[in-house]
Image (tube, rainbow, N blue to C red; front, side, top):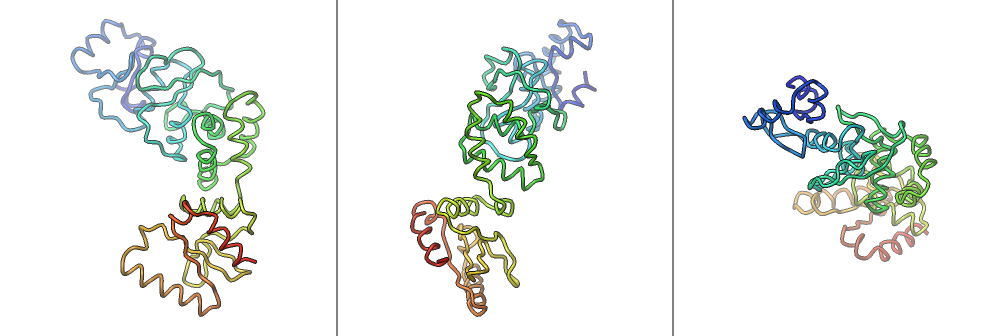
Length: 288
């Protein structure tokens, strides 16, 4: 039991112990003595319940029985591509198992063998399949952000996604996934923040020419750069521009760029999200 738990982030399932030849009466005694701490029906932490996120994810998968995999929002978080604050864990299972667990969202589906893999010992949907499943429970923008993160981290595989799409007849997540794929632009891979991605969405939505993103210009890195128009757009999210030191640094930067023949426009988060039309019109006039 201890060896198995060591391989499984500190968790075991009764169906695994039964396969290992452990009698149910013995499992009951271990639980009564506190050696096994119940996490889900039929799944225990060995010794103590202080688990890593991977431990909690694997416990939920084991609770849904053989063949189950981590999926949807939980898989996106495990891949490190889309964080989630949800306490419930998404699991896809080929059978009805997993229903009734208070901290598990069980999704019943028979996965293609090419859509499942193992990550850090956890059975999980592939990055491509997770994109489709995410479209069933999240927004188009969430799927787009997931795909951008996958591209930034070198996990984006368009062939694998196309294979998933070809098998996705009738899936609710297909339309959001196709829309998110259509939203992808080469410049998204260079974006470092949600604000930059939103600005790029606005630029594309209004038919403006695509800028370079986080582009080097002398000693500076420009958020959005149109070198042919000698236009630099700085996105002031607030956190990095509120101090007196930041104020002085920004003014010096603007003066240096002006001396080099550049126009600098500063756009705030509030302007970008609450008055995007004004931002788009301003950029259009500057780029005309």
